[in-house]
Length: 514
Image (cartoon, rainbow, N blue to C red; front, side, top):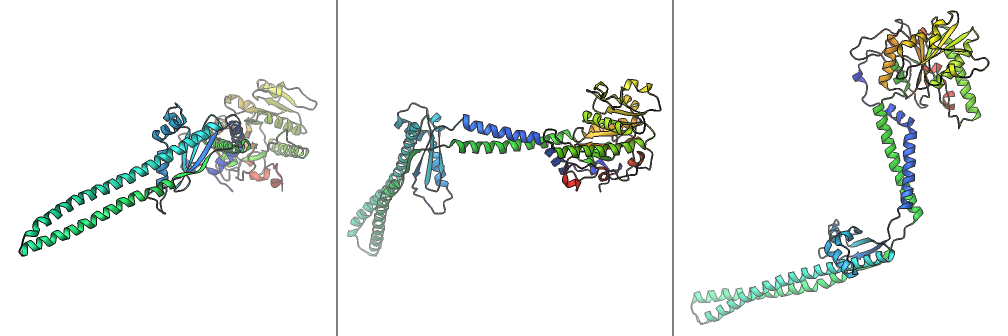
């Protein structure tokens, strides 16, 4: 069981109650389900009203001189970046004979590296034929640019090698000339010098031959790279399936709408701070939940649901009748967020109390009041609050009013010196529930209990304030005001024995009924 005391510091409460947040979001299912449905419809409408433009695709096999088996895709990403350059775009537009700006054309195509050597090019156009022509021209321009860069690189490498070879040849010629001039000399020193010149000539000859071979290899390696860079999949149009696109966009819209709706519902629940769990409502009002009344949809209610609703209302009426009969002072029903339902409850309760004597309902409900409704045979007498002082004391009075924002608090004492609050879950903020409890305490109107309307069906918290001093929650700097007589429980003040919440709870589902 959940216990709560007035002396608990507010800092001990968690900053965010996940259970309350989940319940609040679930109760706002109309919001996030509407957002999800709206996202579904918008996604489907986008697919139908804004179909993708005609698109063509082609694939190019790109050969790189520095290909490695463990390449992480750096080379193909470089090719994708080179594809989106004004040089290649200009060459493609020139081959098409188009006057379009290269910068505009670059927005209509893109590249994707499928593997380390396979490049996919996607191009859009005003028609399928234009898209195919653009894809072909763009692929040809990329292949030509790639081959040109390979050949330029090979020629530059060969030229550098040949330049180095020529320098070696010049040096070899100087060595040969020196050898020819020193052949006429004699002596040990001349012989040693001549021997070193012969060694240098042999080294230069070997290096010249090596540079010749490397230059030839540089030129020889270019043809395989040029031949390896080619279009392997010619340009073709991409067929778009309208049903598939509609289903995909609708699913994406549904997911985005649902996510947005859940986020809005969660943010709204945190900002609004409207208690939904019975333990929170009881703690904020300072009174136990003595009964509940589940909400049954009118349109979808079947005969068995209507029978269970009538049985639930009958049990609620019997519970309230015991409380009113056990009270020596007039009792009122004060609503918060359920004025119409409170009026129906008051009429049922007055009919049950009519067996003990005449009952007069003092009506102070906002909007459609009971005093203005058409009377039926057997209905109790209904008067306004302005005539409450003229009623004879021997008649039992049952006041009906509201504690919604804008309530005239000083009029509540004319409805009854004791009250039962009828509160719809999730309608009042925590601050307003505190205000209601404080104002009732200031008016010396004890709260006998709370009837919770439309509770969450999955709420398993306890709404009974066990062993709690009967004081009304007030502000942090205010002195608590005495709400009831000390030492007795809320249910005992109503003239009945103290019962936990589950004893007076009115089930509305098969699971709780069992």
